[in-house]
Image (tube, rainbow, N blue to C red):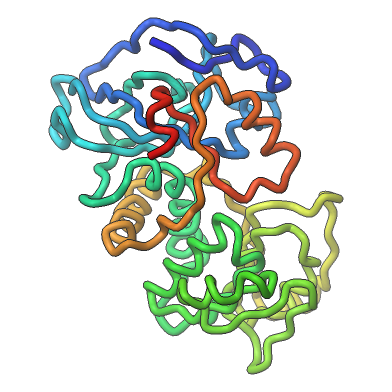
Length: 325
């Protein structure tokens, strides 16, 4: 089968495109014929060796994929041949990646695509959508009526946070470029603020904040939090340094929480999949603009992500006919 793989970590040039044997299908595995694979920043971190994890060479890159079930191991009970499915937790912790024509995926890490959803739209969304779902439910413990501030609401994770929070009954304030205000309002944001200016809550403080940008000073975010408020960070400032007022922080029992989906537990991923699939079935979370290319584009995709400024979601397909879907 054709695959994009590496034999050592390093620069994007270590990515090779070539033939590898079909994967072994264990008793609890599902063999999937891949339709598309999303390219995420974590993929390049793993490829470069910057994100330490167990790799078995040749290591197939990529973690998020959609495809069609073509074989089930004897212990599999929840899938059957012909099902359209997605996964978002391969290519890490010893698991082979999915940028290949076929992938053997453990049944607990596989989820059905809701009827009527285009598979490539789904694969573009699952990484950021599941991140948003786990942030809201497990990291921030948000609930209906809470006030949430999303710093960087127009990004991939930001838009998913806005939609899922609104679905939960959370009141969402999003910071963004004014050019994105109309689209964020349509997604469910109740208050919008120009991110070029410091945000100061007009009616008190908020219950939770997610900083998706890493560009807001830590103390500025902490000052917006109510007593016992929570701040979640999913990136870091370019300087990798921050300062804050420690006395105000501990007196008001505020919390700073870091999160990367690579460390999510299997139960967290499975619960997030339920939330995300429900939203998909309602036509939510699928608004990403796609840049679709064939597998040989993988190294270029990694370079583009590293350079920054990529607004579309890059999706790689084994069949060039899918490029113009």
